[in-house]
Amino acid sequence: MAHHFDAKNAPFDRLTTEQLDTVRDALDIAYFRPNETIIGRDKAPDSLFIVIKGLVEERDGEDLVALHGPGDAFDSRALVQGSGSNAFVAREETLCNLLPRDVTLRLINQNRRFASFFYLDIADKLGAASQEEEAARFSPLLGARVRDLFLHPAVFMDGKETIANAGARMKASNCHALLVKEGAEAGIVTRTDLLNAAVLDRLSIESPIGPLARRPIIGVAPGDLVSTALLKMTKHNKQRVAVTENGEFVGILEDIDLLSFLAGNSQLVAGRIDRSSSVAELARTARTIDPQIRTLRRQGVRIDVVCEIVSDLNRHLHAKLFSLVAPTSIRESGCLIVMGSEGRGEQTFRTDQDNGLILAAPAPTADLETFRTDTFDALKQCGFPPCPGEVMVRNPLWSKTLDDYRDDFSRWLALSDERGVMNIAIFYDAIATAGHSDLLRAAKQDLIDLMHGERVHLARFARAIDAFPTPIGIFNNLVTSKAEGDALDLKKGGIFPIVHGVRALALEKGLHETGTAARIARLSEIGAFEHQFARELTEALHYLMTLRLDAQIAEAASTSLVKPGELSTMERDLLRDAFHIVKRLREMLRRHFNLAMF
Image: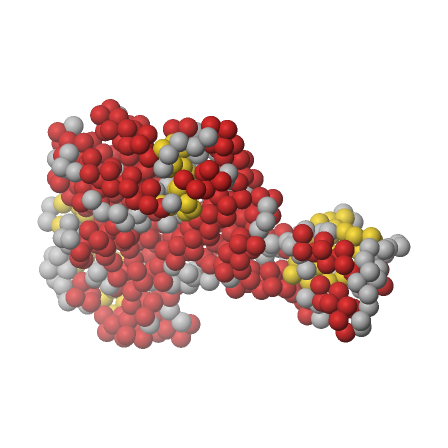
């Protein structure tokens, strides 16, 4: 009979109510004295052990591999495989629940999510975790607020204005409805109303719009639930509702925008980017990209797909901005590039500006200065804050001719300092978003050729993988920082070493791929990585990125910190697995680049 069995602990949180009843009926309890062997090395356990109280050491010979405390289960892999290589010994008085092997195996066959906990392959475990729905972490979509949705501007016209003027105003404002001021009560007139009046009712286009306006206007507040807006549209058979705050009209919510929010329809956002005719309009559309991320994550979309969608939208935005602000001389001879996570296609929530300009030939000074300022201001208006390191078009160091960049490559390489290494890394991750992409291809090939065979320079470049320690201790414990509120940094401890380590190998091999996953796949193809390790590395990267995105959504901020104490047992287990893969990559790179010489 179960004793202090917590069904919320992994992997039991994946079982159905009926399956949990089976577990409770089958559980037994056992007591172990200090230093008593619970499972011997190379022995086949006849039960899955779940610690109730006490502490259990996992040992590989004389080496302590891990400690298991209350809520932890062991030895799942030995249970499936028939034997395990490690021994389990009680460090102190310990109580365990025991789930018989035959019951465990039956549940594995019945429940795929439960079975994923017992996978022997780390890549399979991480992959299975990334595919699962985690909607329970977030509020339901209909629990979101109207303020989170894209709102069209509230455009007013006098009721005495003509149908012709109203149509022109709608086109200029890129909206489908106007608010009409006539008398004490405002009304609303739509594009369909204008068309019906002119085509079906055969009214003159010089007729006033006042009589066409519909009243009363159905409205919602910015703080109202999305479900409230949907219900009002349904109840009153309306395609749009006005959004009012403190008696003032602040926008109009269209049904297509509400439905796109619920469906996470990024194509609609791309369409709005294409239709934008001004920076102000583009900035309004840019504000709809971040809500797409939350929607996609709530729907359980894989992190790599989320990043691909967001990066595509941001690149689309940069291309449109280039067409809006670039003088003719810049458009004819320039290439706008984005770098960093944006260039690698690994961007989620918007961070800072990280862009540059490559020119085929010098542009007029006035045009170049105007472009630098206008691009910076426009991106800032679109929600991209300034880059602390000034890696931006505004900085002349990142907006110049191809020949000037070539001179810089040699200088960066010769200096071999931290700034030079960072600049090489930043540029190697660049991707063209607008203009003549052949300029970037030529520049990258020059950089690759310059680095080819330079073992010392490549080693100096690669050693940045050791800039931050992997946050896992000798006892397989996750190492947190009290200064950060008992949290650990996913980017410093895991994501950066993978990204930069893979980048160093890709640069050495002369690869043109920019995404980390694409680089890993290509490195595996050419034999730089074993196929299995490449799978594990990709899944580890995606798992760490997923945890980071979840933390950003929870904190509503750009953060890389996660508190292991707030993770489930399964999540902590997978996080340890991911960090072990990071450690293996570091060890491999230290040997490959002979980093011990520094």
